Image (spheres, helix red, strand yellow):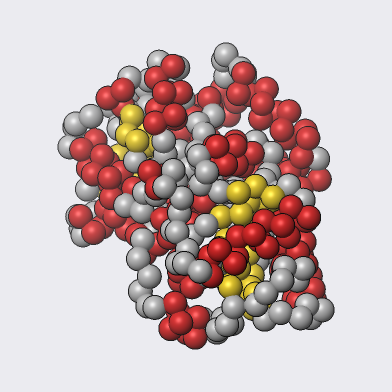
Length: 375
């Protein structure tokens, strides 16, 4: 069996989701051939640059504009002409890749390749099975097309949204967002993990993250923790952002609690299992990983669009706490950390249904069924 994953170079979560499902497929079918490809490589170069690079710049400098564009697209009844053209152009460019790889199934972990493959099926090969894996707790209309064979979504609410837009129930799998199964169980006791990772051994350990590409108010988080009473410590994972890492390390020099700073790490699951609470922006993958690890979350500074929607959902389900300011973050941690020190970190009962550490295995099973001609 051959499975081609189409992702997009906007953040790290989309490729991480693909990797989790690839691992699950190989666990079930070791000879299975899988590959993840950046779909933007096959789009018009100017479009890829504007969308991939422009998204990061926009959410950092003019977030209100991105919010406006996102919300307007949510209300749109039809695909804009430019997007339709880009989908057609990219679908044509993918013809040679698909002819060379001969995949039994194409899996999309970003909305852009999902639209491209819908066009590919419409104009080139209607029989090629295609699945979309939505990597947030909301489903944007840009994901939804009548000829995508299957969707994997995180929640029953997302299933209802798809049903309302005409997607048949047989095409929807409520699986959760796929994460590495190593988030489910720690491989070592907490003390051994902290020692191995060179983390502070004493006090409540706060894990601060800025996502894979390093966007988030880490310096604010770090300074806020210095105002929290009691024995506290922190591990800060910056991601792939050298400038931010430099600023974070400089800030760390002026703080008086135990603190470790890391760039990009592959074993986030170990850091989550070694920590008492996560402070982060609410990316779909990061949030799902924390849920799988049973790690309480405090969310800060959600990016406009999907992260704001993730926040609304997670807070409404009492799966996370939103801190809207430095003062709120100080108060939240001051209340939360003493409670966690009296008992093992755990999710609230209302958040337990969102904990889906084995989502990737369920999605892999659906992919195999598609490859074999099933629904």
